[in-house]
Length: 254
Ligand SMILES: C[S@@+](CC[C@H](N)C(=O)[O-])C[C@H]1O[C@@H](n2cnc3c(N)ncnc32)[C@H](O)[C@@H]1O
Image (cartoon, rainbow, N blue to C red; front, side, top):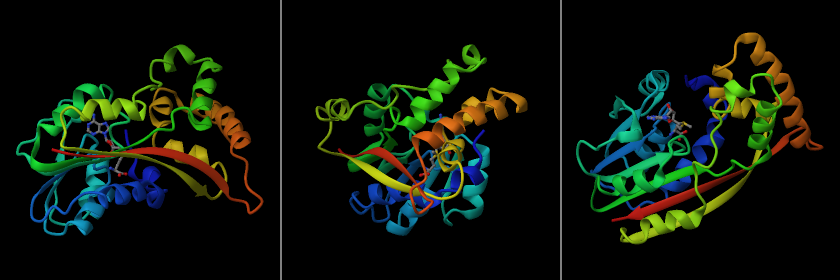
């Protein structure tokens, strides 16, 4: 289950890549945009602001996230619940946009070419995904799982290798696209307060792990994981925590 409150505690840092991705897309005019994995509507808000005349549909599988999107997201958007693993566009679009969804869905070599097939001629596919699976935050999560008494239950839940190295995306798109623009950004994220990296991953990567544990187990897991994180990401002299975070972006035209 996704929790919009936990996720949006870091709304500025989570939405910034959506803005940077959208600002590399051509204007859409009054065309059709799909925001895949729209979550609580923050990425949709970016699209509505940059492309005010566009017809936007936000799609997500989480009823909690969609309820928040309908409440606080931009007006005039169509919100739809659906699983994006096997999504087919009802109508071809000018822009298919997705910020921080496809790191959850494997098989990009199958999924991404299919998305191009849902674009109008001259349309664009724009995708952003975290590429931080080898960062200490994720390595330590895997190690804490391995060292825990629940490792058999948890190890099948851990995700690894979903986001592929940059050249593989070039090889997927280059033979079938009119243009390919791929880049990576390493953000020096500055977090505040105690256990900030734990709080960050609680809104995303840690969710499936915690969901598989009971209350008592969750507490024990959190103690071990927080201790490891706080050693890997010590507070700076100003009391804040640097949490470097790498993301890959791609804008592909047809
Ligand atoms: C990290 S949030 C991204 C939210 C927003 N796009 C943003 O820019 O912050 C990922 C979203 O993907 C959705 N999601 C995950 N797997 C999905 C699936 N198979 N089908 C549809 N949505 C999915 C989740 O419900 C969640 O709202």
